[in-house]
Image (tube, rainbow, N blue to C red; front, side):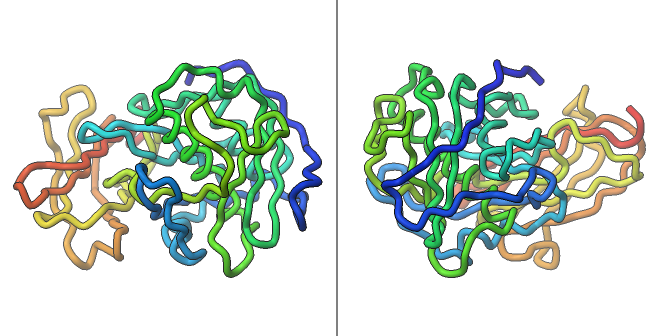
Length: 306
């Protein structure tokens, strides 16, 4: 994994935000893994806010204690958001820890990317109405991006911040979580010179990946003689399918199947696949009403010491 130059993290005072409580006493080790989300439209100027229960319903699929970080990935000709769980260095609180990692590091999966720059200071706070205030130094926005890339990058930050808050138990009952993004301590700025930040930002329901393998993560190693496969996916008319192939020869399929109703829990899928030691590629995809494959997500992983 390639590491960008590290960013400095700092706490900020936010006198203009009423009833803001600084986050304290939480570490990256306290961050529970698995956060996903539903959201509203990329074209909408004000995405529809989700209730707390709706935005968090997929965020408790795992009990691992890692920091959630979102990345951009291209699927079916469109950019969407995917999440990885990382062992991140503690930056003083779970939200800052995840955001610091997002800006200073690269994703495990080579299919994912990010336009954020690590040359930034980060400060975070959270209020009783589940509004997370994030102050990021202007150096984080140095990339020359399109309006669409800028919108996705801002949503990447929103997803990561709210995921970290959710999994570490920082959200109160009631209001849907949202983010107010400041640049250099100033409100009402423009992210990447494209996205106005004069409003509370919520997750956009159309930007989550349609099919998403949570386990195994890219590059994961398992000593057991079987692979645990789980994730989330939209409902497809032609069903949800999977296959495992040799990583060095993807045409050599060693196991495949379809997720039956008893293997699905709403949008969540799960299966245990017996496999001998080796390096594998797992793919999950849906069949649309047009009979074509859609949303394919692929991960490489190792069984045994390989």
